[in-house]
Image (cartoon, rainbow, N blue to C red; front, side, top):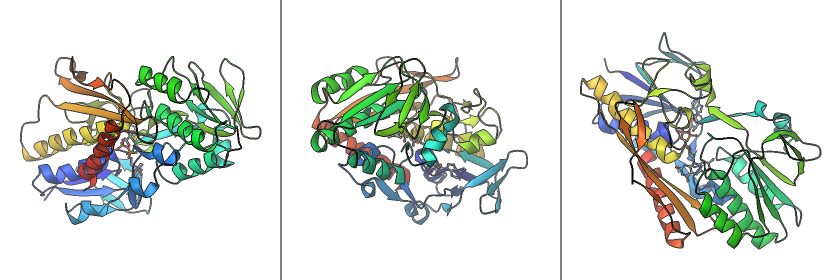
Length: 396
Ligand code: FAD
């Protein structure tokens, strides 16, 4: 009897894990992927849709290659509960499935309670996040396009860690780029709960000064604690209230709901601790957690590239375990994160992370990686190469 492997969530971590479980087992592993969405919409590149230079269709990929080419069974549903003792998963449709190994990559959940009034403001259609690419991505672009002349777009950033450290700053650039061409008196206000820009700081600040002077205003240590939907006002912890026309309020984040509900989020009730040799949860045996949902190692970003890398280490370790092979004792992960500063120019940050057996964590390899010297259109070409490549690697 073949081991049943259930992969929960078909994002950057889950889709890659499903495919590589098949590849590493020479197409013999029995793999089922459970994902509610009919197609994969990428968060990377979605800021370009918000800025109006790209469409949602350009960042959407189908799931069916995973079944047609790789023999993965795909169930379009969502997991409503996992019973780790009985090793049973319950689907929203009511069906139950048994597993020998479960791979959980549900991404992040947004903690609406961390900002007073936010849940209501979202309900009223005043605020939205667009921190999971899809209909909200398009809706946010529409709000920006419909903003009054000379209006203000405000984005608030929660304290790190959150999904995609440079993502909010890239978004600010995309909105500013749109306003520069379509609403020249319009403004972008970045309210950052952190001490300073958390990724590519010097590069972003130079771009803001050179390309978006008078458009982007950056305020560090500005923690948004409340929203008044009626007056479109953001309440800050220390400073005066701020009024804006379009409110992109990002609350604190935690592991995807199913990870929390299953008791996997054993790091402050927020993120899942894993054994970095195989990404098995330290809370529950035979459940492997990937991507944004995990408690990251130092200097490891919550990124799609990282989730793809976690997935390969986990898939190799699961196949090794089920086959009685030795598990790789020293995995290495890479990360490259591109940010568009306008519709064509890009900056990147890269790093290499190696497992350290003594400390049981990943450590950045000294001298590895690097940072762009300045934005360039050539890096814009590389960034699209990265995107098409990772979509093909995860889903193709
Ligand atoms: P996801 O990719 O979000 O996948 C989670 C999946 O699980 C979803 O498809 C969801 O439907 C499914 N799911 C959730 N709960 C359940 C359930 N109960 N049952 C079944 N399925 C479920 N990263 C980069 O590397 N480069 C970038 O340039 C970059 N840019 C970004 C820009 C923005 C604006 C944002 C928001 C993010 C960006 N990221 C980038 C980060 C990247 O999107 C995430 O780090 C990545 O998606 C994490 O992968 P994941 O598998 O953990 O989660």
